Length: 264
Image (cartoon, rainbow, N blue to C red; front, top):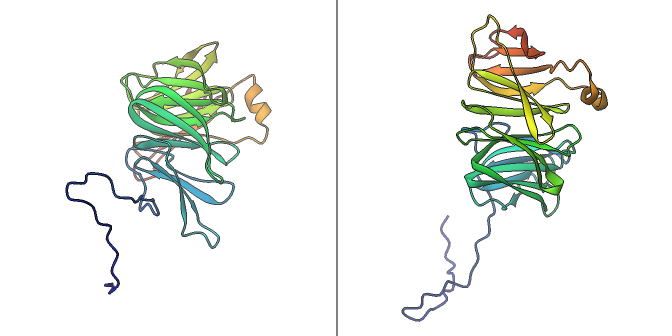
């Protein structure tokens, strides 16, 4: 719509190279990053959506009268490609690309305070997951070695780091005190021992090895029982690129749900 009102111009001297006396303020972000990333949208305890686009993390209320307002976390200096929600459903971790890719862990409420800044991944942070009590964070990079790192994030302390796989790793989850990763035709089960990670390869058995795009585990009402389980079955499930779901138990496929989706 055209307007007859005119905006007063601030005159500058010829040749004046000083910046105008004005600031730009971000009001709205359209769309979000869906390509080449997973776990890219979350629902917080306060019924707010958290997602990201470019280097901006967005918090948007979807229920009350403020549903058309967005708030922004601007702590990243490069594109965000991964995120995960803390068990408290208030704190979130976001990871970016870059030669010194950083992980920002911040509070989604109020002024969205930065709680911790973790640095050490090269090229980018592909996926992350908090453990059950929320005190540790597992992350995997998109570097040549798909490096896995375990953090005590509140202290900014790196507990362990190890090469994840020669093939691309797409997802990582905590399961009790253990970590599981999956990717191009592989799944691995990791145990933290001191400052290193011991690995067990997942076995596809008679099934053809498929590229596994995502991971999940079955919830338990007793977190302590999950953490201290002696038989430790690593009961989890993965989504394959062919649309099948695999249920894993003790490093092996326990059950296949064929055609759960048309494709990955």
